[in-house]
Structure formats: structure tokens, C-alpha cells
Image 1 (cartoon, rainbow, N blue to C red):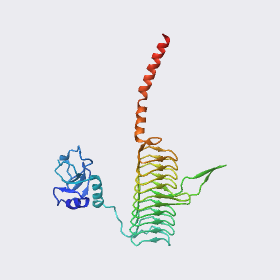
Image 2: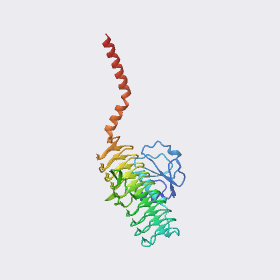
Image 3: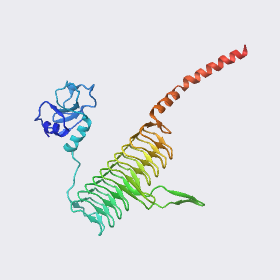
Length: 340
């Protein structure tokens, strides 16, 4: 793309050569001629004289000290991501059903789907237009896959699951396996029914080796536009809202509700039946007790608490060695006074 086309696309102000051809995106340090990069802040401490990118996306109040053509925008990182999606589009596949794939006779496939090597498609399963099943992806019975979905190698979508449009499931993701539900009996544990389903709405992306369990009697649902990292566990009957971001190694117990526009850090642990209200931000390694309601704001710690309280508590803990010394000194003085 030419820089003038990029500026128009991101609604930015161009300062420099409008006819420059840009072929790829790159980081500042790795950029070279023909690349576009971006600044993380308006007061960057980078040595811009050494930057070799042909074009830079910068904040509107940026004072230019570089030799590059610049495009000023409100959010350079967001603009960079939008440009990257055009210069580096996702790999697409032409219409094909590989000879090694096993397709049930009563399944319904759009005419332009891609089914890779060693894939399986179960009974009464449907796949929408433009969707791709990469090598080894498996679909159970009564599964519905929407349009323009990408299922990477070795994804498993179990019986009855419903996947919306433009969904990306990365390698090893398992959708719709049984939830972890057992009832204690006289001679051990009896499995509680796991006969619900999973519903994944449009524009969701789920990372590698993440698991989303089916509802026990109802459904597990992931809302539109939600992004889930690698190695995340979503248990049965969990309800995740729209535009939620969940980082790696988070574990979400059964019947948890996470409302719209929440941000969940890595390694967060959710007790069952807890609720996270819209707009809440939960820091890494936080622990949410069963039944806890986490309201809007920034939260951290175990058990989870508002960030300001967590900071105060952390400061008190760090002061314990000094307090211990003070107590020992006071005890020594008291002992000496007693002797007198």
C-alpha cells in the first residue's frame, strides 16, 4: 500500500512522501526500508535517527525527529494492527476436501469449504461458506460451524456444539467436552449429567490447547468478540459476555458469569458461581472465591480485592521485618525496666 492509502484508511494526517510503497509491518528495531512501524508513546525515548522504517505511525502530539514519513493518529498501535491485517492477511485455502477426510453422508458442507487431511465430520453436522478445517480437525455429530471460521490442526469440536461466524480455534483447542461434575455417593463419586452444549458467538478467537466444557444441563456460552488465550479452562455452564479478554492459564469454574468488556489477567482462578460485572479488570494470579461478586474497577490479590486495598496490604506485609525488629527492641527495653 502507498502511504497516502494507509493515511486514508486509518484517518491520520500524513507528513512526508505520499507515494511511498509499504510492503510489511515491523517493530522499530527490526524495521527496514519498505516497512511501517509505530511508537508506543508520544514521548518515545527511542533513537529515531536510527530507525530505518519508511513510515511511522505516531501520536497526534508527536514532535518529529525522524527521517521517516509519519502518519499521526489517535492510537498508533490500533492503527498498526489494522494495517497489519491488510498487509499480512490470514492464510486462506481454496475449496477442497482431502481424500483422507471422513465426512458423514448426511453432513452439510458449503461449496467453498476447505477440509484438510485426516479430518472427520460427524452426522448431521454443517459447515458454512468459506470455513476451513485444517489437518486433523474433528467435528462430532450435530455440530454447526458458521461462515469463514478457521479450525487449526487437531481442534476437536464435540457433539452438539454451535460455532458462529468468523471464529478462530487454534491448534489443540477442545470445545464441548464433558464438564467436571460429580456427586459423592456411598461408594465413591457418581458423574452428574453432562448433556448440555457449547455456544460460541461470532468473531471469537480461542487459543491453543484451551478447553471449553459443555453445559451440564444447559449451555456454556462465549459472547461475540471475546478473545481467549492459550491454556485456558472454561468449565460447564460458564457464561462469558461480549468483548472479554482472558489471558493464558486462567481457570474458570462451573457456572461463573463474566459480563461484557472485562479483562482477565493470566493465571486467575475463579471459584464456582462467582460473578464479574461489566468493565472489571482482574490482575494476574488473582483468586476469586466461590459466589464472590467482582464489580467494575481494578482488582488484584488472593482473595481478590480492589487494587488500592491490595497495594496497602502488600505494603504492610513488606513492613513486617521492620515491625518485628521494633517489637524485639521494645521487649528488650521492657525486660530491662522489669529488672530495675
